[in-house]
Length: 150
Image 1: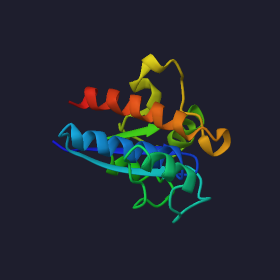
Image 2: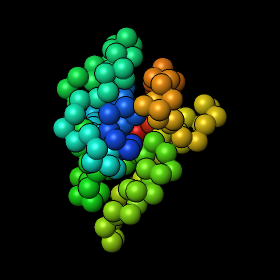
Image 3: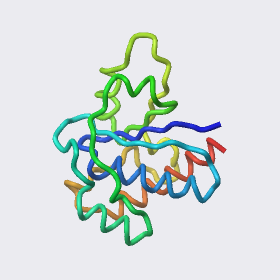
């Protein structure tokens, strides 16, 4: 069975595309059938490629983000995806505001899949400039999610 997973952050140029890229790479290596996408709760960067420093940090780890383009999260995503993953509490709040009545699609924060990292969200590297920390966190959470889905 194919699982459809959507990763969501604010602008869809750092955290959620890196989460999508890392997860789809690791899921493929694990032989897990998934469909992935990423989105932002804002419309600031719609149509743009992931942030260049994020792409460079991911590429240094063998993860290619160049095919991704930012889009805005919509209420239709609740119908399209089996699981929606936010990067922080603000993302979760913005996602839930758009939840259609009766939708049962689970929404979780990504770090829930990696309790061993000891943080409750993925900090935004657009502001922190710590792209490696983001990749470390999304890798740990991706491995936890893959374990749960397997």
